[in-house]
Image 1 (tube, one colour):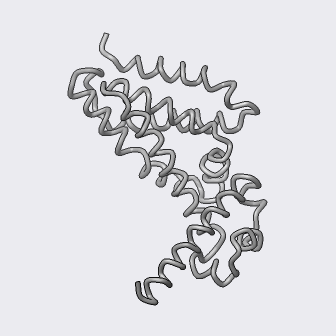
Image 2: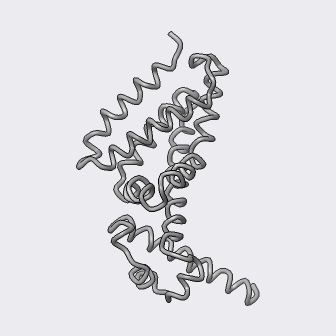
Image 3: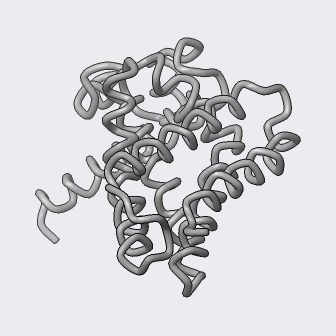
Length: 198
């Protein structure tokens, strides 16, 4: 590997370290409670190295949020893929999303600071990009197979996504999210069951 390759690898390692340390700090102390100086100190890099990768603390937060959303998306997909039946994939994936939303490290970044730091419109667009395709695919398959009442899928996707996001936001602000998780998942199951033909 040439000198350029080594430098590229070092730059990527620095970026990964900044993401890791930024994520830890944002999860522990919140966006407002963390400064760039703390992040670079924890990462063992200079401020110059930080600003080489991220123009602002908000840019680092945006990258951390993307990483968290991708992680949640992978968790949901992995839980759903264990099931063979498309209906079970839908319900299991939705339940896993709510379970992930009770993880304190994910909650702070994804649900509390995300909308506050980025603004509702940008946070919503990122959330939609991270989750809508999978939900659209499974609901389309279920509709086409006659497993849910025939209907346009697009509004249904947004209604379900909104309901799950609102439940996740509510869980994130309760003193004991795990306490409310079972009831929230049961309510979601009843909501999903209402989509099935009678």
